[in-house]
Length: 144
Image 1 (cartoon, helix red, strand yellow):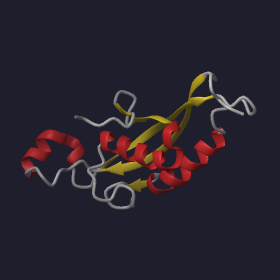
Image 2 (cartoon, one colour):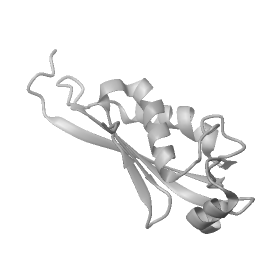
Image 3 (cartoon, rainbow, N blue to C red):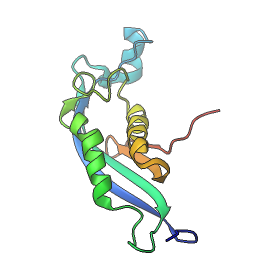
Image 4 (cartoon, rainbow, N blue to C red):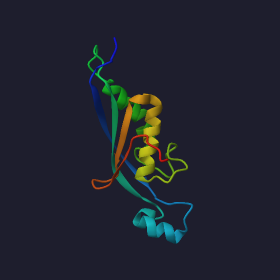
């Protein structure tokens, strides 16, 4: 069956994880890092209770009535991301985060890229809440 003319739906799965990190850029001096990142630059880092929202966008399959089975999104998110970052220090213990400054922006892009490999064109958005007041959204866009 074809999905031509089928309604397009945005389907979101929410997961949570706890992780520590230290924000620090090798391209900045110690003083500049401390001025830019403040307490987030403490030597041993600090932690967050993150909320990760993964949104897929696609047509409803006329046979199944779904865009994709949500258990696939759950299982992929857990296997590809959460198993590596949950209860870890992102600067030291995460293979995924190796070589990046684990800002909420960089993590959103990283997680989107990982999940895009699994879900392809169905990937629409990754929304990563670092706190109740701070979050980043990434939709695969690149600057000019």
